[in-house]
Length: 306
Length: 309
Picture (spheres, each protein chain N blue to C red):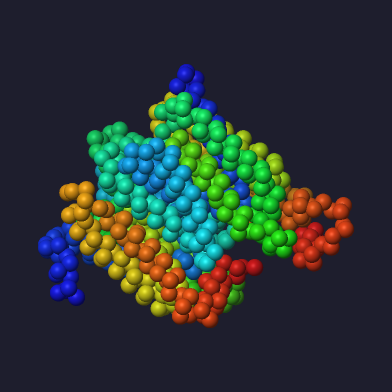
């Protein structure tokens, strides 16, 4: 692999400090998002996941305004938004989209204000771009331990809760009957989701972190019906997309418009979407009999409360 | 505050609020808040692309909004709609990130497209906005009944031969139309707040669809007007006021529902019930009870008696 890469990769890729950081952090983010994302897709909370990322922008913008490190802003806003969403009942299947949407609208409005005030008080104008679309190559080294630690915390929460989480996702009534604290498990999961999303918001940007959260997980759940395998597949797919994205972004500074690299976020998103669409191409030929079942397994959580 | 240039702002914002109120009612009823968020947001990427090519921003918005709507409708047949919506959204945003990185003036453009540039509305924008607003409201009026039926009672719509899928596609197209015109004025991120907040609030106060639409439009107008006035005074972005005022109205509606629920001789809160107009009410709307010549499906009959009991 190293040999082959040696021919494709531009010289100096792996010795460059920012690139190493990007690969390290990108891997942590991809694995965390992939694992958490599987539950997000099973629970039908894509909108909540995306909203948490968008709400995190508010924190990022606030941190920018206050002159703090963006990651802490993202994390703080993400976790408190998760708490608010839990309070107003995101767990309910009906009506929660609207509640999520209203929280999202208010948070985005506040982000607009923070960004506006930020551009008023300082001369840097690129802040909104960085906050919204991320910049993997400019992660400051002193946040790396915090990034990795929070990724591990999110993973640990999901790992410890995975069985209960799966049960509450697929059949809340059954879980409640068996004595699982459905609400508490949901809240813990939502917090893990907020952490995962804040992480990827730093790396590929708040508005695009949904790609790493949903894309690999949705693709993995199309291929495998077992949650464990799907988590591994999602983490692997996300990592592959991130690495390849970094590689392409590094190479792209030699592509047309001269002297201007293409954003990493774009490559990561494009690869994730391509991977998801590939599962469509694969399915009809080989596993036609299984498709009905799989569709059923995927649809089941959406219909189960009835 | 009402000088020549500001008049454009008031007119444009009024049109936008009416469009948002009407389309938002169905977005809330159909549980498509996510699509309402994704289509304007993704259309923003089209605007960035058009800016890069030197075209009119409107074209980019229209192409991306329509593309997003078609993508969600097409992919949504074979997978869960929320997953597909998320993926279509990030695809468009990824392209947006690419376009913006090529553009030289990105910060300003990004900011005004995302959060709106309501004070720079020029006279020649008003006419297209009005035209597109009329077209999208006319489309909604045209498919009002089948759309209402597929939104509130999809199973019955299917049983009566109204294609839920086609209605979904048409509705998303209307949303795309509405979006491509309104994004330059209120911004991609806040169009969504204006669609969901007022419509959701209206549902807390009334269960009748026509009243809910009217009330939603009124609340959207109040939100935008108050927002413009506040924004004019403070110079803070309009998006902030729209988001916060819309959330305030929503909380008001929730409070009203809670009060009514606690009140003694009331039926349990209808606003939060899964089907916003109760099944009986919606059924009556579609087929008044006085015309019994056609057999009522058993499922509806039981639903009706169940609700009454």
